[in-house]
Picture 1 (cartoon, rainbow, N blue to C red):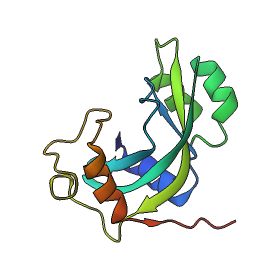
Picture 2: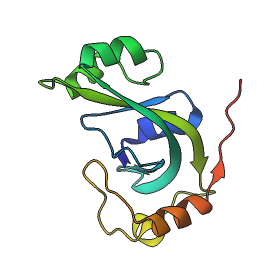
Picture 3: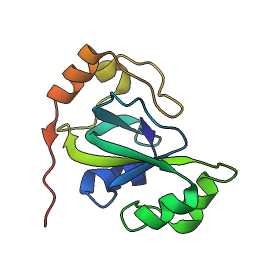
Length: 137
């Protein structure tokens, strides 16, 4: 999943606990590999999917504004003209020792516009090279 660097970092540091998307991801997706867009342009981590919640943008905002890691204005700009949106609940967060080049680590030449499904063997290999990120309490 392509995510702007500031939001990718917020997921990794535990301050962003919900990732907002215009469309749901498939219900059988267990993990999201996080590709931080330019200027990072690398895989910086992954997270377990702890469910999804789809509803109207105002409802999503009311429910997740404290853990969404985004300002109200940017949130509503993102969902402008949309009747529905999805909040993906961020579970356990994983990170590699160093950011991973997309082609070398995932075998994908171009980053996805939003997200791309990976073959399970590829996803398993990428996730196996990461360790769980501990967040302070």
